[in-house]
Image 1 (cartoon, helix red, strand yellow):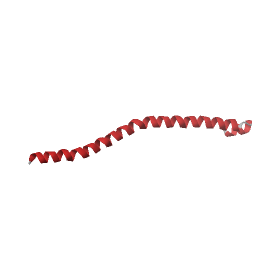
Image 2: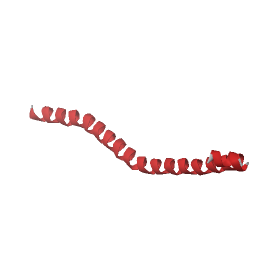
Image 3: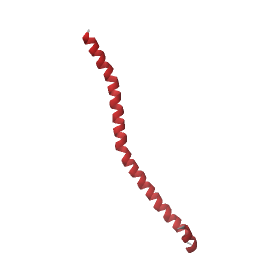
Image 4: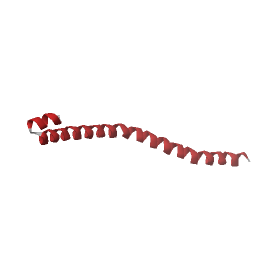
Length: 70
């Protein structure tokens, strides 16, 4: 592409076209990655919060069971 631009004298236009093409492609890939990561992160955060809740409530539940047994 660069060689063609040099030979025809339109290197600037060709490089501008390449920049626009690849900038749009990178933007599209970035949007796709964001769309893919959102549900994964949501599930991960939900599992972390659920685990934290179990770690906090579990010992309290065990303690109340021990107190009732006495």
